[in-house]
Amino acid sequence: EIVLTQSPATLSLSPGERATLSCRASQSVGSHLAWYQQRPGQAPRLLIYDASNRATGIPARFSGSGSGTDFSLTISSLEPEDIAVYYCQQRTDWPVTFGQGTRLEIK
Amino acid sequence: EVHLVESGGGLVKPGGSLRLSCAASGFIFNGYNMNWVRQAPGKGLEWVAHISGSSATTHYAESVKGRFIISRDNGKNSLFLQMNSLSDGDTAIYYCARVRADGGRGPLDYWGQGALVTVSS
Image 1: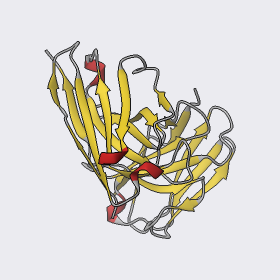
Image 2 (image 1 turned 45 degrees about the vertical axis):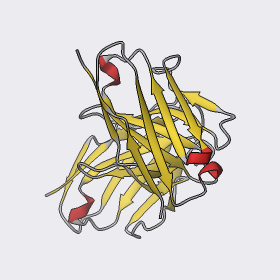
Image 3 (image 1 turned 180 degrees about the horizontal axis):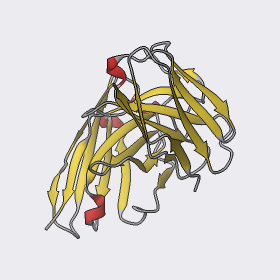
Image 4 (image 1 turned 90 degrees about the horizontal axis):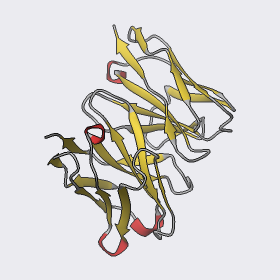
């Protein structure tokens, strides 16, 4: 099973600041990595797929990068509505696996 | 507009069974693979099961293999999860999710609002 490790566990930043979230895979997943946002009380929402492609309707302030085992999600300028838990997910092999999540707090 | 609506959640005793349904609309259902993903209270996301558009292929997490069965009725645009031999560890919100068109195993581009399953005596 491919294990995804996200860091940091919690990130606390102010509006307008830049956020960088990391996801490391226990073995190469190529570019088959996605990022999801889960706001409090809501279902997850796809942000980024195949490492760097924004999903439909996702603001340009969200971007993804990386390949192989190391990936990043960057939010260029934080908005209050970005308060959420962010998960990475790999689809290279069964079972599909998720990281444990990074909680983003806005100061 | 794509909509996924789960139903069938509730309280069940350990060892019991429950069947979840997911009604899909706004897209050509039989053209998409579908998944179930769950989230225990206060915990992260856990993939549960996958089914191809034609039902030819299914895959399961080890934690549910042999107990859960994923199925679909393309004529009724519906996805199902039959859950048997339930235990406390199965308590979670269960989401149905659509696999993006060219995704094979994922990513999951649309999610339902979730159905809460509580296993307790």
